[in-house]
Image 1 (cartoon, rainbow, N blue to C red):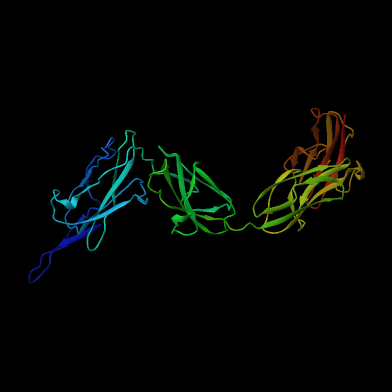
Image 2 (image 1 turned 30 degrees about the vertical axis):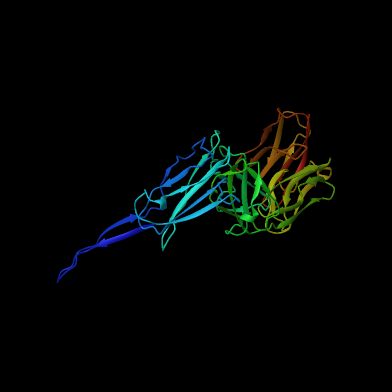
Length: 387
């Protein structure tokens, strides 16, 4: 713990400024012998030593064959403090007889009337095999404090050196109950059917064999997304039977939906309109962004079998028809006009900035095309034959 102290001088008429310093009390006991990871310890036993510290009421020591210090073989002692010398009996413990080829863990902490320090831990073995403590797992995903996580997700962490398996705790409270510990041999776990808009907490530790554990990882938290609201998208065709359309269904707000329309023979595509009769696209196929409401979209077509190639009342006509190389155009008061193929795909577009009297169509393949003309009032479609 950090403590701050300061001093200032005073006389009859004034006070000096404060001079401040700080110090930190140590939070551990220094273990001296045996060295950490010592092998081939005699089964007759060994004496464990630690250094004396000032300001201590007692030392607590635990010895066990599992690094969690929770087995039936657990030994717990408390030595009352004698003084600051490390040569007294309060800073040692003799184990007595030990089992063969067994790993032991021991730890010590100091207590006084106001606080208890952290444990300091070491290990030794009566066998010859190296004691491999697994690394603490590094959590990966969901990221700490992540939001809008799906209610079906996966906990993922990095593989730890020396780990043969892992244990994790997962719950909806930061007070994770260790009775809910689950073991897995993978570095991930699938979670199903979580609650919407809920906080979840998790942490992981690594395990080597049956008795050697890492410390727990940091505890991470994530929040699941809200329950999805789906809106219905209905598609219609005008006139009925003029085309086949795809893309209708149920979608979330702002979800992108690919809409397609395929014209039947004898119909030319004009545009898509929504339920408010607003033109939303003049492309046969396009990506629609779902609004926050149910929506009806209509693909509008012209019956080209009823379109004539004679001069109209809107001062727009072209000739010859059929044509082969040059198409002559007579047009006035127009916003735009386009040449489309039989599927409704726009091949060429002209606007009212262009002065058009003739169009070179020599590169077009023989077949049926459409001329779509727009003024400020209406859209017209006329059939063009190239041969």
